[in-house]
Length: 150
Image (cartoon, rainbow, N blue to C red):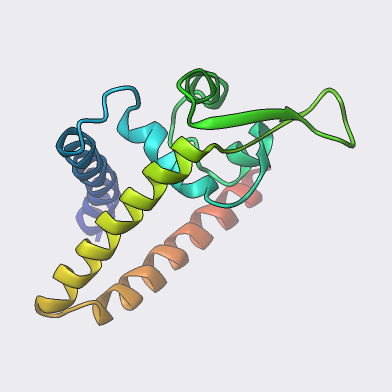
């Protein structure tokens, strides 16, 4: 069982890296050179929302990177618009610019193509529901474990 547990943990990391490779490949195909794959996923996860950097961190959109650094680069590259929060002048909110929205639309098309291709394969998309349930259970296990420690 220990081997199965460790394999699951390593597979989660490998899958994440592989998807980042897919995003990087799409950026290369589109000849987008002023943003990296992690930043692209941050944009995708912001979507139509307007969030603070803290909310990005809490939602896990930072993907193991420095959120402030990526937000600064995304603002400088024109993918994000950063504004002071109306209720707290110390806080800033970010939202997609037109350039950011256009890239998110292209990434959404990539994901739609992936979904369509995956659905044509055996066992199809239905198995992802079971995989997702398992991942949620594992996340809940680790959260409960950490809560018991503190």
